[in-house]
Image 1 (spheres, rainbow, N blue to C red):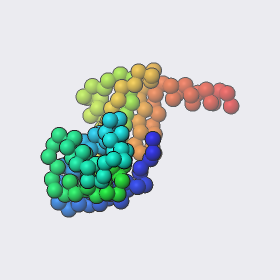
Image 2 (cartoon, rainbow, N blue to C red):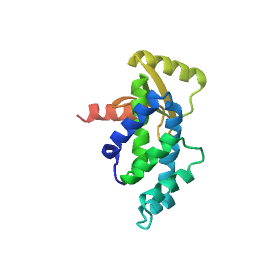
Image 3 (cartoon, rainbow, N blue to C red):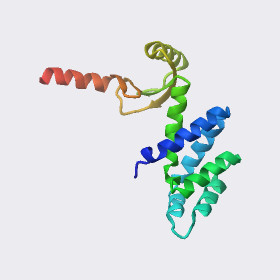
Image 4 (cartoon, rainbow, N blue to C red):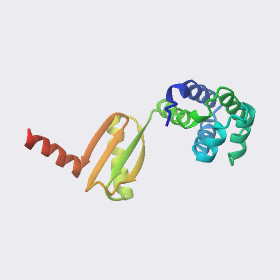
Length: 178
């Protein structure tokens, strides 16, 4: 799979700035999410690569496959992406848009992997701890991973807190072996 992060960055920046200026961050994020999901379908990918379709037809295809109504600015955005052969970059554009929004709103997305589901009380404690640690509002995404024996694995950007049993075994093993 081609990484469209670099190619998608200016489009994500432009979409974010437009959405922010027009107080439409939620609407744009939803539209970009839906469009990103749409272009990832193998059938849609094949249609977008089909040389018998021109840029306008590709843009029309994307607009037709999105269940919600796109406003004029979003339709123009799709047309622009299609004209520059950047429709496959929509997943990267969406991801970059979310990052730009989180940075602007001073929200830190944090992924937490646990061996078992966390209850509401544990989530509140974890949220309070991480908010204090990073001195920012946090957005927790919790995934249950049965491969973890126990504990938690927390990722906040490049920062990792490995409180998993597996991580503790690995650290112990490296101390004992060295």
